[in-house]
Length: 357
Ligand code: NAI
Ligand code: MG
Image (cartoon, rainbow, N blue to C red; front, side, top):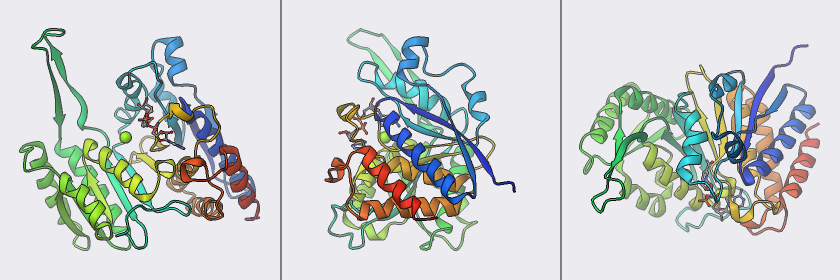
């Protein structure tokens, strides 16, 4: 019998990235062995700050060719206390996202068993899907510095919006909204004060919207959106916004849902020409690195999104059910108020997977 077999690039990176990716690999390998419906092979890729210190760069020159051999990637985090964050982020993550055209960053946000939504307005918790433009906008890397070291030193950071870039993320966002029960999309913008790029953003949104008559959509300035997320969370379903706006709104969303320790994200190439990359929203968390208490749930959830993307929707749903059962049972890491450590959560999820037999 030919079971589908997936090849996954495992890029743990730095800090707790190595701990949570190792945790997720244990769980996914167990799932594959137990269900016997698919095979999965993780290949360790050592890119990160240790690699940087040895080689002078975060990734080798042929990193994209290396990644293209895989069906998907599971990434941990990048960032170290003794390297400036813009060096590590551009060195690894942004060196991959842009060139591989992983232009859709998707972040499901919902109140998870064991986490508590801090909003008393959200009666049933939160269930949102955030779509972030992941390839241009404010993070295009355009700009420069002049008169360095002078009192009149100047720096520019140019946001770049293209019709192609906006159109493809809007199409993806409308399709995603259409696939959810509420069929509702909020387009986040800032076209009052940013009168060029954001106006093009609005125009393209309206054009794309015409192809989706069954999706209810509205437009919201980003500052007003923060208020709506807190004051009227039930009025929101799917959200799309620029690279910078959604970077910020998605951290807020994760906090409103309960914890950054459970928040997953997908960096997708919706055309499927390139492998997509799945990662927890959180960073390398220096303060708890090496203590063995990092919450692995965000990476479990990211791995489930990965399984779903490569075609194993059923296995992904089963994995999430196992994770939810463990959290409902109160087996939680300290960030969620529990006393379990990372391996304790792994063992509990593995015990749940055993029951699937
Ligand atoms: P962070 O997400 O690493 O940590 C923020 C706080 O949340 C810390 O108190 C940390 O202990 C806690 N936390 C995060 N994940 C957790 C988990 N799984 N379980 C329990 N607690 C958790 O963000 P921070 O401190 O701003 O950044 C640290 C480094 O990570 C920096 O170098 C930054 O550039 C990098 N970073 C990398 C990201 C990535 O690789 N995608 C994303 C965010 C930050
Ligand atoms: Mg962020």
